[in-house]
Image 1 (cartoon, rainbow, N blue to C red):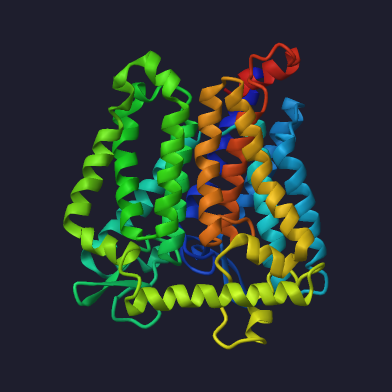
Image 2 (cartoon, rainbow, N blue to C red):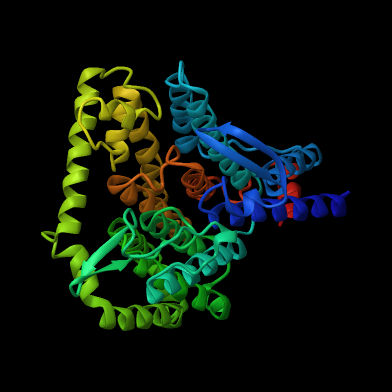
Length: 451
């Protein structure tokens, strides 16, 4: 029986890993790996034609394998109450505000919520081994992103869904420095800001997911972490830079007690990444300054003006219907009726108030801040290891979502997966440790089978 459970766990973890890696290294499920080996073609689905490939069966196979596993484990967790309750209430309100929405929005946003809950509950129940999964994502995305920036063009990976990239193309995101446009790294994503947010969160989760001492796995973690920092740098995403920096600083500060016991060798893993960043900053420091200092440049000024304009439109939409909002996923549609050239507002709080009204805004604030308060209490109790592992990724989510929606659960299917991973990791750190005496003997046995 125990061997059968272990085999089922291994299979389910494998399917989970394939789902995460494929999803986070594919710009869209309309093309790339999810269109390989086509099984069915829709002339119209979620706003356009879709060719469903064999890899679209991954979520189905994963769920079936998990259900089969659960019939043998017979244990279940709903996660930490500070996340599960606010997430549940937000999901209910968001689904309610989908009432009357077109099928396209129902498909997209109900699917986002389903992905969040699927990833979240799986993480808190079985805590899959994220290190190899995240390492694969970081290596693929960072390698592609770095090469795109260094070559200043796409790599021709159309089979993988890579977008056609050239700094001279209209609509391609660039920065302006040295008198010419510079292509920012896209990786295998739809936008450099999404690449930056994906890498920033993945790097923090990579640190939080390794249960053993970092020194014991330096040979494995060091090059991946350094490469991830390089990819994050070349995304030139200011919000991702800030989120990753604050997350890393918080991780180091909170874990200072353990480092004092382990000795200074525990900090050696920072050196390769730090040296690599110093080198690229030495070569491309003026490009960084163009993003953080020279904000009067046409490219940067236009971006800031657009964001302020969209924020004003979001506030106006909130004032028009403060209790219900315009409906989930209808921010751009409603804003474009007020002002021309409207885009989706780049702030989760403003997005929530515009689409879901003040009740939605309140639920978002609770969802973001309740885990933060719970982690603070964990820190005050002296559980520095779990506090650090929970705080650093969650801080990335908090920071990035103030400047963009690239880590928000209704951003798209990829951001929903990323949010689910961050929420699952935080909830896991907040739950009772496996050796807690209050846990039942059956729960302990089930967890041993999973490990």
